[in-house]
Image (tube, rainbow, N blue to C red; front, side, top):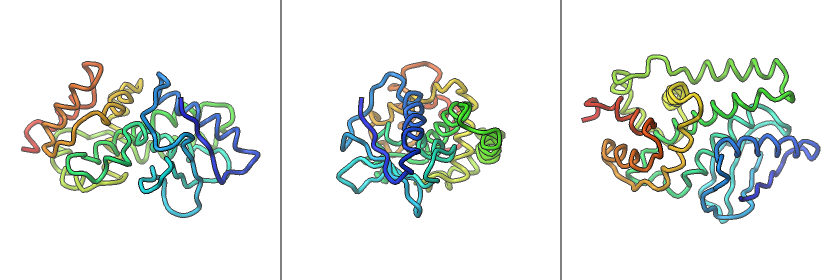
Length: 230
C-alpha cells in the first residue's frame, strides 16, 4: 500500500477529499496492489492553472488536478482518470513509439465514468451535484454508434491523441458501457506489462495475453479493428 498526500486543498476539506480519493483507489486497485512509484507518498496537487495530469518530469510521483479547494465530483472525475494512468505508469511510457496512448486515454476515461458514478452516490454530494455530474458524463461519454465503421472514420485522429479528446471520451464511454461492472480496470492495469509494439493489431493481441479474463478490452478492440486498420 502506498500513501497519498493532498496539497493546496482547504485544510478543513482535506479529510473529505482523502476519504473520497481512497474510495476511488479502492475501486481501481481492488487488490490493494499498486505499481512501483517514484515516491511514497504520491502527491496530489490541486492547481488553479493547467490541466489534470500524471506529472512526468519530477523526482516525486505527482498527480495534478485542477478543481475547487474542497471535495467536488470534478475532483473525483479527474483524480480517477489520473489513477488510471498511474496504474500503467504512463509517465514512463507515453510518447514512446508503440505505446498507443489513445487506447489508454479511452481506458482512463472509462475509469472516470465508472468511479465517479459510484462515488457521487455518497450522501456528501447534493442532488444538484449528482445531476451536473450525470449530465456531463452523458454529454461527453456516449458510446452510441461506436463500431468498426466509426473507428475506421476516426482512427487517424485517435492515433494523434496523446491526451483526452472528444474521440477518446466517446471510446471510453463505449468501454464503460461494454464492461459496466468495471471489468476493464484490470485490463488497464496490465498495460504496464505489455511491450511497446507499433503495429496496432500485434499490440492488441499481445495485450490480450496479459488480460486475466476471456472477455477483455483488448479483444473487444480487436473486434472493432477487424480489417479497417490494415
